[in-house]
Image (cartoon, rainbow, N blue to C red; front, top):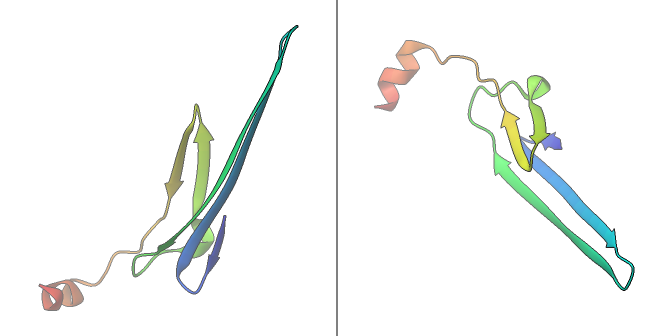
Length: 73
């Protein structure tokens, strides 16, 4: 996982090997995804957790001032 210029990039690779008496099996794959971070993202506090095949990425975001929120609507 890396953060650069307001973009979060996640790279992962998975390999699996299984050997039986008569054969062996290999599976592998990789991916890379890049997403833009929202305004106010606290890049230094981004965390990632991979559990039971699910990747969870948490991006803390500072609250925007109410004046800015009203102007955006």
